[in-house]
Image (cartoon, rainbow, N blue to C red; front, side, top):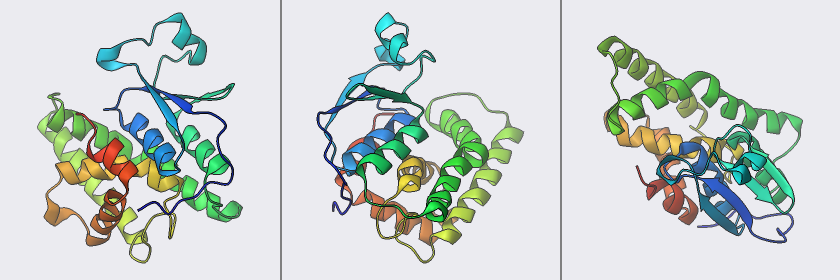
Length: 213
């Protein structure tokens, strides 16, 4: 089910550096693939290493993933990359107010719910320690915050409307992790419907559902 379309073709494959088990890398690869853009993935970070090489430092002095190269143009920061891909190659999103409504959810993840998701994912899936009081706090806050997004999804298929938009690409990998961690009875139905709609997309299946731990 590929219903996104691009305004102009990319002249050559995009190159994305990163590790496939990184949520930030997943959102970029999900976005690029969903927009039907050719992508060459270069594994770096984690067990692959490569972040300290002169070649990578010339691309991204922060030594972080993902990093994207589009012809001579190089950019890093996952949300910025998603914005760039959607606005360069995706369907028209709308006017300044429409764009702001998308942007707020991207920023909301980073400023509100992302800390709680990272802590819980590390504790439940990657064997990190978490004090009991901190675990309870992260569960309570994450549950409440996901309900805020669920309310906005009561009347739309995607956060972006009929088609996935930048907020869907940014938060899509995170809602998959939430469905893996949280008891299903605590997940609002509208959030599950959104997750199910994303899961029908081959790009989401490849880079999110089938992503390594």
